[in-house]
Length: 308
Ligand code: NCD
Image (cartoon, rainbow, N blue to C red; front, side):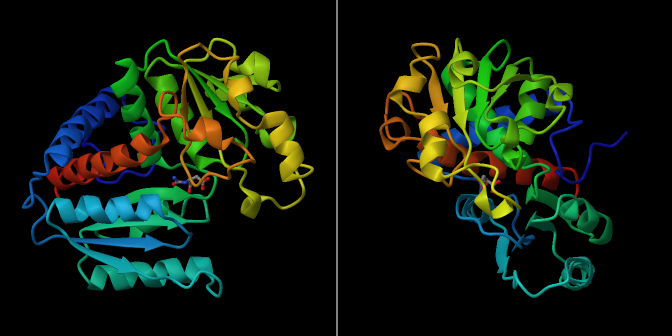
């Protein structure tokens, strides 16, 4: 079977492919730090970013990654409010095909939208986050960040804390970490943990002390108020009191446990500034740096598989 042309999800990606992407990304970290990047790999290719949802890090880093590899990078602006999603997606696909786009980076509020587009466009499609489904490049950049500090993923205990229910980052991380031999725990109030998530191979905790005990990595997630149909949490203040990651709670984990957050952070809601900004423990800024390298590795890999 030919390797997939698109990157739509981590689920189903063989561990060897994950390892190869991480290895390639590591070489891009070194190149980026040295200031020399291979500028002609995507020369003459067009990369379009199409974000139906807000983004700072993901969009910028895809654009930077494309430019560093020499692609023509176009930001397509989308009206978020007044569109009928099904129709617009298909119309958009036709437009993109007419423009001869080679690589398409899509973020959409609807789970499955990038997969639908992938059937309709000639370009290689990269999912930059779809609804509550997956955010594959985020999981890859998180894995790269962990590997640089711990040298492996296998056997590590990773506690993913907070709003797992609405988090595509959590789902992609669970798929990636469990398939690479990590032990994943999800920690949060019952209202924010999806039912039957144990089937994904994770342990569920409704108590920060028990959930963090012995963890190597503590990953805090943003409370995604925009995806909450009803009040699943009483108030931000109360949420922080029970579920906020502060120094006291971090002390439940291993003494050298490292802290991650995909961003954007709600300081004082799911994470305390003292923890988020602690240079000894927090990898949050490094995650952003790794994001560029991982996205370069993904663009590189897909382009070598042959663009249309
Ligand atoms: C995340 C996302 O959009 O899924 N952000 C990101 O890409 N770094 C997480 C979030 O929005 O909380």
